[in-house]
Length: 356
Image (cartoon, helix red, strand yellow):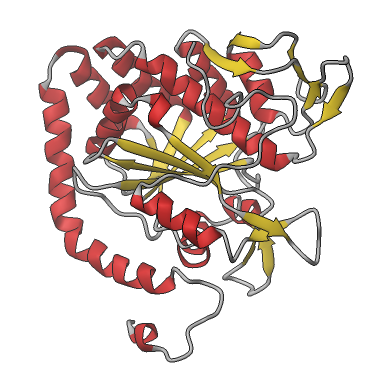
């Protein structure tokens, strides 16, 4: 199975393939140790007593799905999670295409966290057909294939997968009592129902946050009163989705108590599906990390892309800029900043959401 490591003519598309093969060998060697670590971690969390124990117990009921290539990560090691957000609007996951793909990397050793968005219109090679395919189509068809594509074609190893519907994210916003984002100008999207009529520190409830998550036709009001459409469409939307995620973490961080841990565990069980290798111990550690994370330190970026030549409505991995961004993401270094959004103050709805 390792013959590809010495292939004199490796595939031109897939600079992460060799790393993937070696890494999976490491996974097999550490699986037994990691499993024991997960049980021990769950026992430690439960041993904290009171509401933390109930939170750990609730997590045994989280929904799971088997995803090839995922594996337990020992406590203390960096973990990379593929976050998939679906906008089913009352429909089932089956056959649906994800609207959000975010790679989240947490390093317990440094306390650092990074978010790297993958545009849903990113073109990749479908391993089943060998033909070009939108990455979000794979997310709705075969999660194992999706993880393989991200590892071999994007170049980012994936430890775990989490899936959540947008309505579930909306309920989390309400759970934390609303979120706050810094807005540099009035915003609207008549298709998603978004309307924020004043700049500054804006409070959003779950319904308003959902409208922001869904916004693909954002308009920004200029000083002369004219409304200008954000021409970046989905590339702008992925930044706003990260903004909602960080703002939610910010409000969670203001209430890091056992009751919040129990509420968050209940929300995970009700709204999240995880891969079968993600055990109670790891989920407990992730919740602890979310409650202790400094939202202002979260590094954020979108995978650098270029226009996809056969179809200008699609994008492809930027062969020049993407490797450096991926290296920074995996190494915990500063991520490249995207271009500013017209009409928005620096940091508004982008990398630095104001927790005000």
